[in-house]
Length: 447
Image (cartoon, rainbow, N blue to C red; front, side):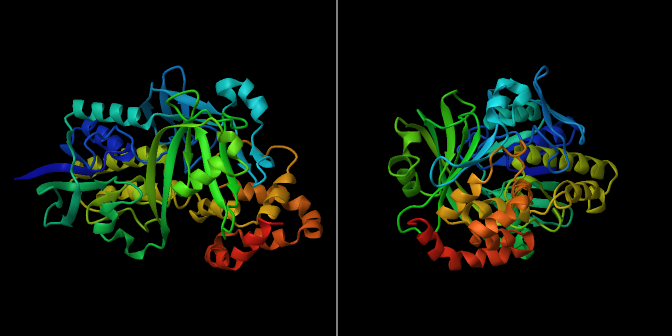
């Protein structure tokens, strides 16, 4: 039997759960389909950061209201209840391969003294957030179907039919909220004109017993494994689940074993215990040109590049569900009816910043040899401004380096060439240059 709805949502992550809550509150007959049997159970690696508590980000100036336990999105006019565990962090640190030299964003010692007022942002429990959103959705009549592996979506004469596990669900509109590896985007042809930047699998262990300098901060670190042509990058941030627990991300199990046992960073992990290990696979696409096709709207990571973040995905879900509501009330079940969402998405995401600036941070961390990176980070005698925004990071660094360029030209001119490459119109050149710099990485690791 085909089940008919005003709205069918695929994916019960933050974006889908928010869309479901909003649609339910608005009185729409709504179904949400989720592949997992427990949507609130987190098994995919996620830092679970609030983005961003310290500045404007993707068209919004979000913050957390401690008194009322609410995430506030004043530009969009949205608020979300959250009274679960959370944990502040007070700086971002990029560590060079010597394990000591680092580039800091924010004065950790001063910020941590200020408590909530000095934090860069905080981490929180995504599962708890999703649980509460879906609870509100169900109370407002939304039907939740779990364990559904969607394998088909097509536009019919009057609706959009979604199939999974042999069942069919028809909605006047469908919201695809199934994340960065979106099946809906693939099935509907949204990816046809997008640029594919690669597949990036990682493991994300949770650890206790670490000895991380400036422990309540977000940390990137780089090292060079013997005979490796590219550097090994890993990152750590506080976990919301326990005071002594940290979320980490490594490219492979081999990288993890090398870092904690053999690398210069092994002192950080001498007494480490692994509490759980999750993983993730990221297929990186350029953003969609438009998050709408044949009555299907994409939200969050399914439409954007990399990370729309939990907060960005919730904003998309809220806005898309409200747009669907207006379209149905106005009897405009088509693109014109949801044009408000399409225009909002363009303004909040691609027009706010170029997605390639997000890519630049990883290029910045990996493009320099060991010797170059140590030298470069050592030039910074004081912290840079307190920022978490990944779209701004490289631009802030390059701006701060401008007065030092004559010194760099004299002492290590090879850095100048690589700094010039860190521009969004040279993304493809950077990618190709990794082949050229393989040998320089190897030389840098032995000098």
